[in-house]
Image 1 (cartoon, rainbow, N blue to C red):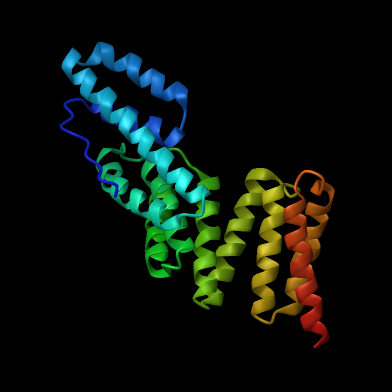
Image 2: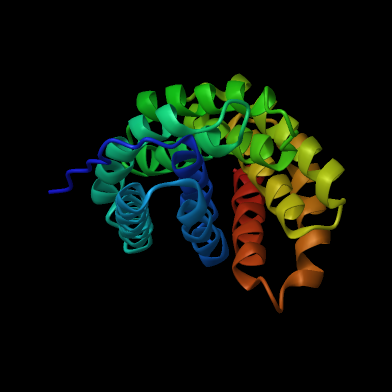
Length: 239
């Protein structure tokens, strides 16, 4: 249902700025793009660039809305059509392509396309590690998501290593008492329980509860998930 064409662009200024505008989802970047092209391009070229920019922003919003509505099939279709263009236009060494791959990986993972998700996350991780400006938080997210894929594939040792790496990065970036760190401890506890490492799982779930309990008023669902993991752990220990 979605067919995307971008026309013949004659300015790298237009294409590279549009990549930024698309991925920032920022009106400020979009307005800045429209202001710049009036100086850098002819009137006819400007009209082409504006048309493509508006079309691309609309397409990205459609993908985001489809994902939010739980329509992962539509979101995946849109992203798979958009991705070749991003590969072509993303500035070398920028975060644009790995961020796009993260989005693709998430929708493919939600559809149960684990092989596609694994390949997508691995490519994104390789790119993220080579960025001109380090993005450790992006790496941590990719490691966490890839660990989820490996857990679903019952490749538990690989999942464990990635969750541990992701958690260490989050602690170094955000501090030991951040929400994402608490969720990381809870995720690791859940995996360790599945692996039968009960003592290690208990240690992680206690850390998760220490972090998440003071945040319960603002983030009750995160605490509820950790408490559920704790309940499953102690239920299994009694069996």
